[in-house]
Length: 405
Image (cartoon, rainbow, N blue to C red; front, side):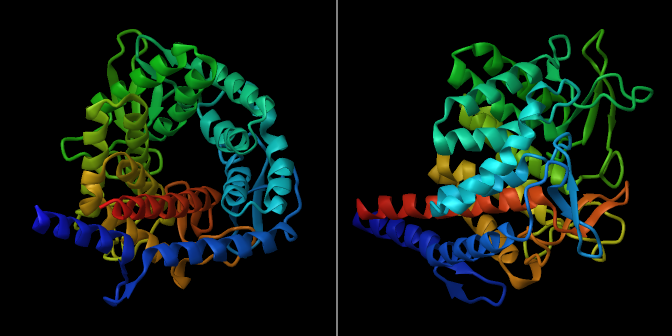
């Protein structure tokens, strides 16, 4: 028993205390991630004075010349910048972040009534949901609940999913994209806030249908599944942003990993846990995953290794793995090395953004559409900050367990 305890303590110390960089060196992870959060907070504070609140220029990405590409609230990305500010406020307790977050969040409120998109979780939950977590102001909760009602109206019981897009009606009858897994979190939260189990039930069924139809036998995912509204069956399996219909689009893999880790947390359905772990294995054991842990934009891109990497995919995937680690310590030995590999790379100078208000460079939006290629993108920042905060929290959890051994 003493030998086992010693080995367990040694393992935990190694996991919480050391991170390996590509040169083989060691650096205390807790201190390293705290330091990086302080760096990000300092940069973000400087950016506040460089980007004034503007309802028509909510930060989304940067043009190739370095100028800001901003959008109005209708964009699916409109909730991410307010969300970044709310998370930085939660970490630092600096009221300057809160004041800026309040200014930017207000621009998104009208999206609670947007009936033409599945992206209400991205838009409303990542802004107003974060606002509610940080203020406990019921007015923010009401916005989340209204948005959840709007999103629930896109659910088709015959299909068992929430419809993603309304365009390309000549191609798709009822398209559902893997990204849609991320919007389920708002519905799970809506049941907690309202007591209405309808939201939970819809989200649960959507996850089950996605589990059944979206994945290949190797746990790679299709981007778009097109359903028949009369039979509920699958009509087509396509891509919209990947290399091809049968390729593995990296951000799609990351959405799936995070989405099923979150769905497991909410439902405790072991099938979702198994799926999230398998997606992580597919990504990090894939022969085309770079040694630094930031994937190329598509695992089957034609010109690898001369293809852009996607920092956003790494940040999203890292968040998903961290959720698993928070829920189950038995996966630490597998997941933490992957987490620390990707985060260490994202925290290197090569990936620092130099365009206010962005924090992270080298993301890819849509290569087939020739849009946002190898530029800073705001959702990469959002999940990057979330990942750092989760990694710091996990390190503290492990340290607490060590204290009782």
